[in-house]
Length: 115
Length: 116
View 1 (cartoon, helix red, strand yellow):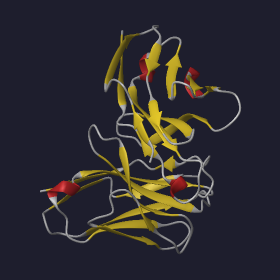
View 2: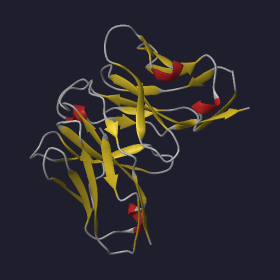
View 3: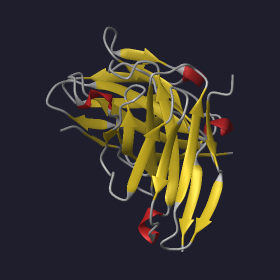
View 4: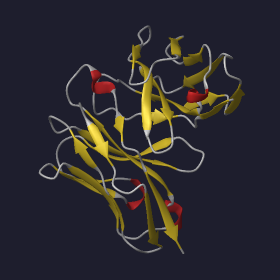
């Protein structure tokens, strides 16, 4: 049981390049989330997927797109990377999502630098 | 809208001393409250959470937190710090209402340093 896995662990992009961050969970969770973490700002929600086939914007969705490929996988795409997207990206999942008491389980993160 | 304030971005304590990390929230109704810990180069891990019932919540690794509605606070404590407690700690809130209830709102984090 690996929990939440993310690939890649590190990535360096040039401005304007595109890339997709991959996330998978093996806990049969319904809900999945993408956050970014910036110094002094905690974690901010980019997008989430309450269940397979649905996605919704979070606090900071601009410049990103997501795909809930199936119940296990939730990818985050940067179509045209900008230096402001330099951050650490975390994927998380939770069992039900619609219940506020749900615990979210986090992956190890992807450290992205945009030059 | 809900928000979280963590007082002190950096806290240093000596090994064996009391750990106190402060968290205050702003919400129109009492929310659900969480503390997460992040060790270097790792993801976040749940320490404890308050949903309903007893206001003193015990978590992993000897940590506990008390929900005080009148003070809108959810401070995290541990009686005796250990070197392994050095990490960044995040307080988070989640509204009880539906709709955006899935969204956790995180504080900016407190980096705990434990001195030998």
